[in-house]
Length: 145
Length: 310
Image 1 (cartoon, chains in turn yellow, purple):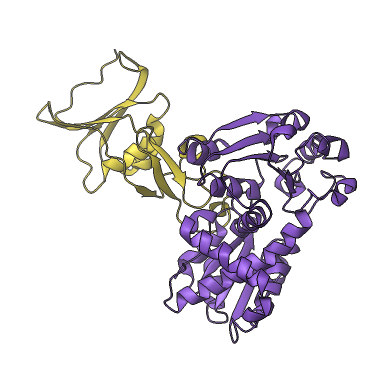
Image 2 (tube, helix red, strand yellow; image 1 turned 120 degrees about the horizontal axis):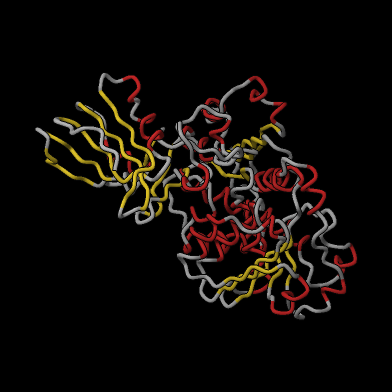
């Protein structure tokens, strides 16, 4: 596998579904943070076949990483300190997320009114969220904000 | 304060209370002719409607109340770009209860978040239409006498048909209900209805294309119109609009006590020759709509005064 150095201090977001890394990159607004970021796309994985990975050098203070579960409920978040993994966590899916997912149903009120894009968790096992306004599934229609 | 956005905003016992009150109104309407004296209903219709708007207005007038409102987005401040939230905040000062129809799904829910008066959803896009569902349920209760042990066929546009989605959701709460979903492939029931309503409740259902093959088993046939206004593509509408036409020949295959319901307006999916068949109850259904809306207005206004819905 391609290796992008070893992190001394940082976060590795692993087991991202292929193609999902940029969604998380955009949500965390990594482009505008003063951190080094490596995105590995389409990496080989015993567990998933193929996966994406994001390595972030530095800290992301004040960001609730559990919310990433709404974007991809299968991800693993590894916290690295002094070059070793000190915490490995799977995000606990929040019951509601606001302005994380975007409803793309053209018939939804969110398409014309300035209201928050709010999604409710309706299937914790499958990580399915539904728009609280039109009930469309995040799997079927949600996109990046 | 209670809002009615989805048919399941009423529990089964509250629904029973609503239907019982509606039946009592049918028996003696005069008893209720002053029930909403000095109360005002606002009808906010951002989308055209005949039956729903007029039946709400008739319901409030029958109860001794008054009505204000608009019947199209063009004749309201929506045309100037006013948000639903702002409109409902203002209307809350003018009326005691409000009915809203909007082409966008979730609009009445947005209104309810900012309202100081009860909001009733009178149809939001292809999503929900709870008072049509209460009308359908009152029709079934009054004419069939039960909700249990029924095979209910839904025919036509099951994708965009909000009345279908709402009635499926409401009937799924009763035991031994079975659904036959009759539609062309392009207009099948949305996946979220199966995932949210049918599968978790273990409601048996089958999806078929032939009305002729399905009709002999049905206790109720719920016909729907293919709605031109739900299509972005006119070609698709023209191709699908005449897929199912219920006529006397097909009715001859049905049970003697099957009921034909339709939320109306009908275009050509039910031939006029069927209208004289005693099993065709869609015009009676429209009459029941006034009674059930009278009952709903009364219950919600009573609840505002601190009384329970049941």
